[in-house]
Length: 429
View 1 (cartoon, rainbow, N blue to C red):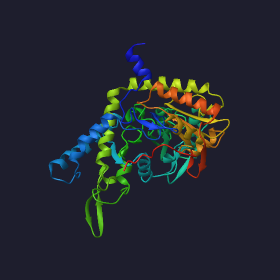
View 2: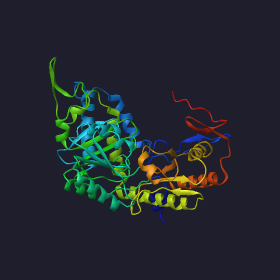
View 3: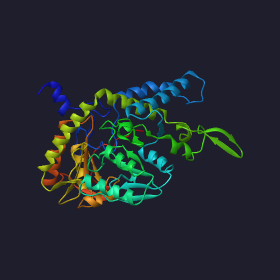
View 4: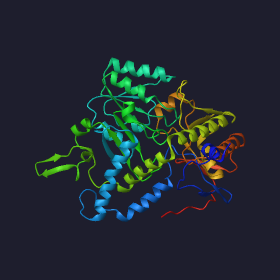
């Protein structure tokens, strides 16, 4: 194997702000932090941090200032719209609306849908709870059968929108977006995609796939500065009341009424999150620089290493949603035959410096359908993950499952924690 192949397959593909972070462990000392909670929030790319540092001295008002910094920041925000649209292959007349995150983006879309929305039970709560007129289709054990169930639902009772996740945040299984778009359009519905998990790992092409609306978050795409995006067709967005009523969303205001703008500004009242918007655009540019093929191969190799290693850990079952899924992101959620995944997660962090997530991952209906235990433990990979990260996790997990934690823990309302925690408290204030 060449040095390039070694780095691409097993080493970090990108430089992240948390690279080399040392964290304390019980009993004293520190270890290199292993971040396997990327599916929840990804650390910032170094290139994003550097870009934000360059932008901050010029921070100023957007769209209404006459000063040089204001003009520069206004241009930055509008150029970011172009970057987002280009990166996801948006149509020329699609709107790019900046929001707080995916949840905010889908709540905005829910406020403009002129009819019912059909969703699957496997959705993250962000794509399950906002819809005001919602019908939920329970997924089958195969993707093919699930598409048939969706088609039957839309045929029996038309809907305005079909909204689906691009990839499960529980299992990492990727859904066939092109097929879902064809299915929705054939039944007179539009397709929205929650791409919070998918976009940081796979290139999405809105126009080519037939996606009508796409939502994603910066904090899962290596730009954790509090911004997200909704991209899609203008007509519903222009016809609906503004998402927020306030300055910037109006052409004119009278004491007896207002004239609202059309386009993205209609739903972007108030001062925008300039730093978050700049961070998203720079993160997308950096992901492009890394290359789609390189990112896919890096993740494919690490995902295979992770899943192969889990097979050898006794008393562990990997949760899956579909028997015919042939593509998955770098996510593995397990349940234990015995013991508490919450305790294991706490011990992984406190004794081994490894961050994972325990729970039902804001996808309660799906988790309850496919799991046999109350909670699962999720390990998730990203562009900054390495083969050593995977190996350390597998070794620590096997030791904890076989021998139990080396320290005593107690369970409280907030979860498991060490009975005696001698790690120094970190003060970031």
